[in-house]
Image 1 (cartoon, rainbow, N blue to C red):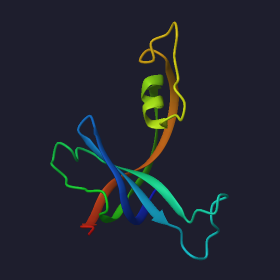
Image 2: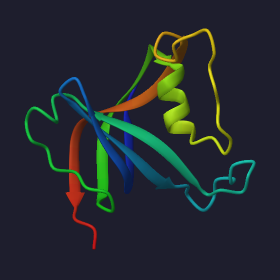
Image 3: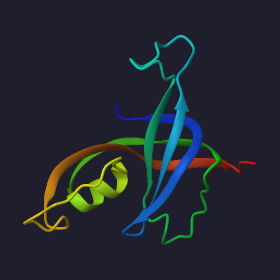
Length: 122
C-alpha cells in the first residue's frame, strides 16, 4: 500500500514543466522521536501534477493538508544549480569546465498530491 496523508505549512513554492511543487514543513507527532539534530519537523516535497498549468494557487505560509502517494525519481543536477541552491559562504571557481555542463545524478522522493485542502496563511 502506498498512501500518504500529511499536513503542515508551505515553506517554498516552485514550478517545473507544468507541475507545481511545494516544500511543506510537517511537525512530527509528539510520541515520535525527534531527528538526530533535535528538529521536530520534516520537510516534504509535494508535487501537484499539472498544477502550474491549471493555475493552482499555493503561497508560502499557507497551511495545507495533502493526500497522495510516494514517488521516487532520478534526475541530473548541474553544478551551477547546486551552487545556486547551496549559497556557499566562499567563492567557488570552476576552471576548465562549464558549471552548466558538470552534472551529478540525484534521486528524490516526493508526495504526489491527489487531494488537498489549503488554508491561507496570515
